[in-house]
Image (cartoon, rainbow, N blue to C red; front, side, top):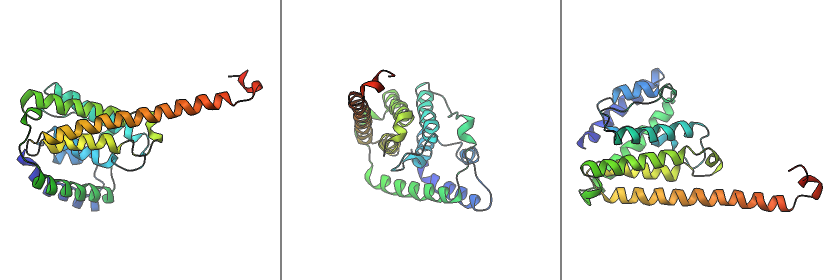
Length: 215
């Protein structure tokens, strides 16, 4: 995927345009219309990779990335995104941050990626791995109760990020890393859910008898 090297000047153009006029996701993707699913997923996941919950937007973003995974598995030629996401207009500061992070990722990915473990990135098998990671990672980001959980988007976002990096130079190592972060995210969310259940059960046991009559 040598096209990723052409992504930087387009992002800089979007950043420059946003200084004078608001640039929505729709307008930005119009500039990126000839790029594939991987690079668009990279652009979409970055704003959600915050150390703190970002609220209902993570549900929209997560479901959108999951939808990209489904479209990828169905061999759709171009991504189709929901209108709710397309109308979001990041600030110039946000576009600067996205551009800066993308340049950083592309710079280092170019240095550390190389063709390896091609089974995970080649042809139909590679598409299934990438699409599956987009679906699972997106759904994990979209879990509503996880909006209370720190890093609820970050860990699934890492999986999606590594899946996109894997396509830069067909490096299957990064698909393996993406799978690891999917498993880690599932365990992380499961422990959180169990903790909520345990605390709820303990709380019920310590309620006075008169309160239990209403429960």
